[in-house]
Image (cartoon, rainbow, N blue to C red; front, side, top):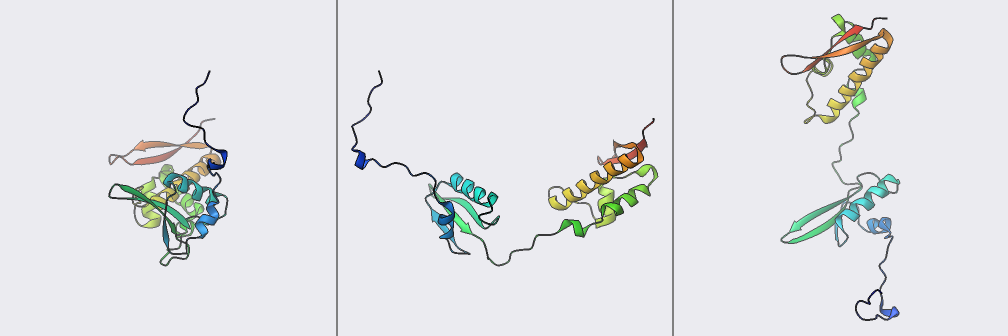
Length: 179
């Protein structure tokens, strides 16, 4: 038989926990360009903001949760970023570089359609991107090159093979498939 724990509590004195905080109303209380300390749990706050962003209730990046330890106490803050000054517009990577057709034309002009990511980047961007320092540019040029290689393989009925250069970089050469 189970045991009773503690003393009986009058129903009128018992406080039920509240669930389903109206996070949108909570966030709208913070003026634009300000931050506010809160007693909310940092992880819960981050999750709530992410859900509101995903649901389209708030713009991505409009609110942010930050935790800072001062002394031995962790403090949680909410930032309302919308309308703050000095926001940089997002860069459009597709218009900065070559089109897929330009990359394809260059590859097809090479003997055995030889190409490498570094060579394509040097030719069209004037420098080689680092995945750590230039992640968006690197990923865009890498993805574009993969797309173009697949297009050539399908049309020319062959396959690009990968080889390592002495400097450790990869070079790709095309070979026709035998029927």
